[in-house]
Image 1 (cartoon, rainbow, N blue to C red):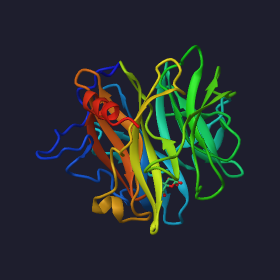
Image 2 (image 1 turned 45 degrees about the horizontal axis):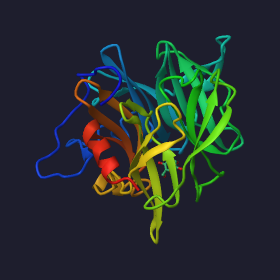
Image 3 (image 1 turned 60 degrees about the horizontal axis):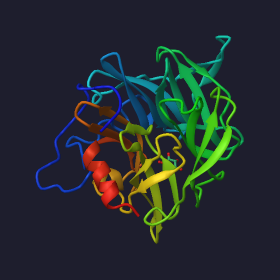
Image 4 (image 1 turned 45 degrees about the vertical axis):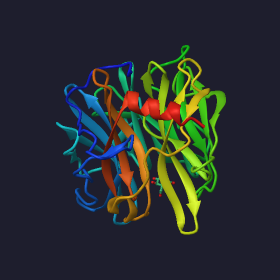
Length: 322
Ligand code: BMA
């Protein structure tokens, strides 16, 4: 059972007849095309959130010079997205323009009265950028959360024992061939410490793992959907895994699902700038029905959508816990 708000206007399709998977695809994928804003080569690995009866998002787009920027988007139905043509400007707390948001793999988390965006920023290599907004229009950039090199900074949607909580994956300066998931804690979203180990790369995800969407609070604990990477003779495969973390001490893994829950199999997941990538960055969920919509980047090229139901997914994780 989801603990949280009702969101009855979120996108949804029932599981197709004959399908036995715990996560299934939207029939009109991809929902965002690679070049739907001028100058874009690709739009993928993007984060969405509900706001005042509609939906907003932060989209990653690489342009045809392969520069990586973040863009604001809005939608009435969370499927058809209107994405701005210029990258998101970032301000400091004195209201001075710092520049536009460069980087990749954004996540958006509503904590108390602020929308907080975390993304893979560049500071002598990849590290976790942090910016917040009260209205989803003007964003204020804070200090980077961690030393380089780090990726996949994912906040929890509420403080636990008075502290903000962020998952991340310490990495290297390239296409990191390793990576476990850690958790850090902060009283002010700026100074991070109390670091804890959460999960290691293993099984099908034996190369590296990284947190995906903002964890979902449930009566069983925090539902965490993550990406996991295995290396084959033909390169990396990015699939999705799932686990349940302890509600009060979320560095403790209660259950980790042994099989993946989603895997690149469709043409738009297997053909693109980087083949065989399904990379989840956000969910929308409705507590009244337990419906979850997962937004994922496909083949580092487009944004796609998949669905699951919370009790079924948790049942699958528990039944198949490693
Ligand atoms: C990671 C990031 C992601 C990307 C993935 C697969 O290192 O660059 O944005 O989806 O690799 O290429």
